[in-house]
Length: 503
Ligand code: CA
Image (cartoon, rainbow, N blue to C red):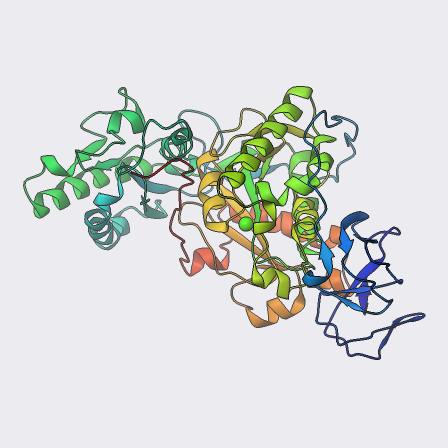
């Protein structure tokens, strides 16, 4: 079993694969000067004050004081480098065509009446214009689940799209396009089978017309609570409409479809210094196989791409894609500056306990989940893709904000990598959880679906775990398998990204 991991020949630091005691000769000629916690870095050579600290072959930062060989390197010991320039980034200089061959090229999905990406689940989604209706809708959904759903065995679930937007917001602010677009696109999620059902209040700023457009604003699709005579009338209106939609959805059947009909998202959260060694590169390998077979894969999380943006730019297929990448990064730089912070606000206490010293180190691990495929498109938050292949969808890195953004883009499934552990899940699409280390799988055996821990110990390769994950993705997308978060119904609130003012 490996005792430490060094990623490139250039690296002057490595990480230990388990808690390792002071005095251990960790590699020839290097003895640890302190106890080093699992996944944390130690110096392979003497590093002078202001010397580069190099991992992934990139400069994570500069030493604040001299660091002797064998010393533990934590987040207090390095200065963050300046962010990479967004001007004139070289593009198209690293276009890989020899992607790993996918073992299958089809899956069993639900074709949709309006075309587009296929569903992975058959769900009655109930949209809302405003938070005010949640109490009533939740009461109705409880009754739909109990009284109606058992009569429609081909429908998997009923999911209310509850959110905190809709009123008390500056609806005409320039940045309000983001939350409005997110909610509009959620109405047409591929798992909802083209059936539209909206519950509105009647006096909100996000009017039904703004949410679904006048052509869909019809009595068979929309219930306005202020038009109902009391609570029981609301219940009977919602249950009646739900039953009509369930009848139609119950006719849907899975069929064998090409993987070009599958759209999935990649996200990570609660990362550690192994995330970039095991879980994320394995996910990247699976993503490359999916792209090779024609599928579309989104990866996101702006603050975790910002420091590796030049590596993404060189995979962009056109100048237009590169320019949109730069403009999304600039928008986010300004968004953060408006709050008097920068990208260094990203790492969490848990990330740091897991050995991640700063955002550069976290970013290098995070972008590994994008694999090596060419980048065919860049999306603004919650936009829907127009191309097939590897796509960068700019979203916040926050797990509970990135998830809804990717859902709005239409993902039928999300793959979620973690090092520290999170029980996160989405109601509208299954989430497969992949962990970076064996101890995480041992701690949460019934929450983690795939462990990449044996990549850390050297017992499996990235290709082994990537291929295993690919098979899991196909099985879950095809409805043959359920990840734990779906089995236990671990559903997080849909936190819609709203960078615009609240009034
Ligand atoms: Ca995240």
